[in-house]
Image (cartoon, rainbow, N blue to C red; front, side, top):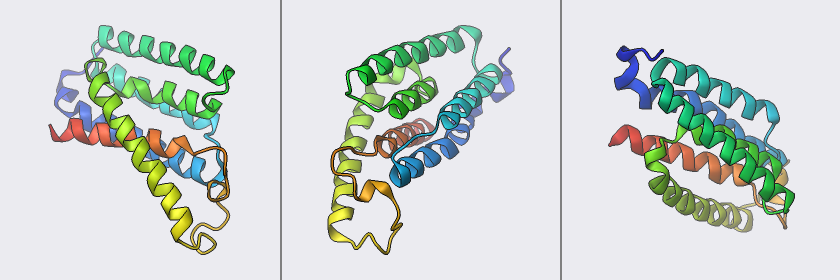
Length: 166
């Protein structure tokens, strides 16, 4: 049952619930090129706890369906070798934090954030001596794959900030 007193703070509560997981995902993907299963699980649990307190049951159900759809699509893309398994699971855990009516703006933010993340990461690798900055991070030497956890986490953070500020 949604607590009406929390409704005005819904965006802030979702932001604060998701932020640590987004930072963890970005760091983990940059450093070891993996997004841990426990991160995705706990992020999803955090969403469920917040949503039960904030959202009406119908809205909660719609967001759970969106997560299930994201899981199936992510699984299929992973089977085709198009995305990593951790990325697919992270999208499944993060998509419930996006309001269904905001999928369009969120996808636009995700595209822009992904381009910015790729550009920034590649330029950082080429211009700085990465031996002095997080020298053991696997993503600095990775030639074939990109740490999408950085872009995905950034997308959700920017989306949630946009919701908070509008």
